[in-house]
Amino acid sequence: MSASAVIPYSIPSLTTERLILDAMTMADSDEVERLAGDEAVARTTASIPHPYPPGASRPWIATHLADFLAGKSVMWAMRLKSTHALLGCIGLIVHKEDDNAEMGYWIGVPYWNHGYTTEAARATIRFGFEYFHLERIHARHMAINPASGRVMQKAGMTREGTFRKHAKKGDTYHDIVYYGLLRSEWEEAVAQKV
Ligand SMILES: CC(C)(COP(=O)(O)OP(=O)(O)OC[C@H]1O[C@@H](n2cnc3c(N)ncnc32)[C@H](O)[C@@H]1OP(=O)(O)O)[C@@H](O)C(=O)NCCC(=O)NCCS
Image 1 (tube, rainbow, N blue to C red):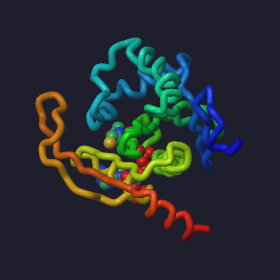
Image 2 (image 1 turned 135 degrees about the vertical axis):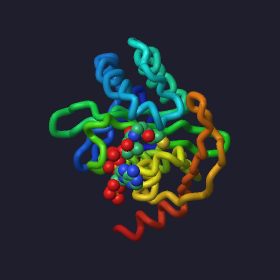
Image 3 (image 1 turned 90 degrees about the vertical axis):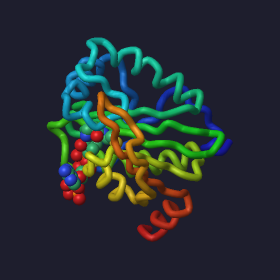
Image 4 (image 1 turned 60 degrees about the vertical axis):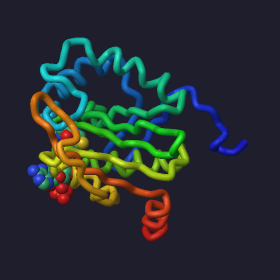
C-alpha cells in the first residue's frame, strides 16, 4: 500500500526546527482564549471576535478532527518544541473540487516577530501539496496587516492583487491582499534547495 493510500484516524503532527504542529485539544482552550482574546490578535483576523466569549474555543476545537477526516481542513496548534507552550494556530481550508486551499494563522502577541509563523507556514504548505495533492494554496490579509503579507512572501507565495474594501470588520471595510502559490512553483523551489 502506498503512503498516500493510508487512511489516517488522527491529525498528523509535523515538526520543524523549533516547532511542533499538532492537534489542538480541549486542554488548550483556556490558552487559546487568552492569546486570541488579545485585541491585537482579533483586530486583523476575519473571524476572531473581541472580546472573545469564554468557552467559545471549545466547539471550534471540537470540529477539527471530523473536518480533517472529511478532507475539509486541517488545523494545528503551533507549539514550541522546547517547552510545548501553545503559541497560536495554523491551518488550511480545503476546496477539493478545485484542488486548492486557503491558509490561515494567528499567533499570540508575546511570540510575534520570531519567525515562528513563517516556519509553520512553510511546513503547512508542504503538507498541503503532499497530503491533499493541491494545485494551489492561497492566503489573504488585511492591507493594514503587512506582517502577515511578509509571512506569505517569506513562505514563497506571490502577491496576486488587492480586493478593495472586500471585508467588513466592525464598522470598517478593509482592502484584502491576496497571495498564491502554485504546485509547480513550490516544486521548483523545493528542487532548487536540494
Ligand atoms: C501576522 C502574524 C501571524 C505574524 O506572525 P509572526 O510569527 O510574528 O511572523 P514572522 O515572525 O514569521 O514574520 C513576521 C514578519 O513581518 C515583519 N513585520 C512585523 N511587523 C511589521 C509591520 N508593521 N510592517 C511590515 N512588516 C512587519 C517582521 O519584521 C517579519 O519579517 P522579517 O522576518 O522580514 O523581519 C501575527 O502578527 C499575528 O498573529 N497577528 C494577529 C493575527 C493575524 O493577523 N493573523 C493573520 C491574518 S491574515
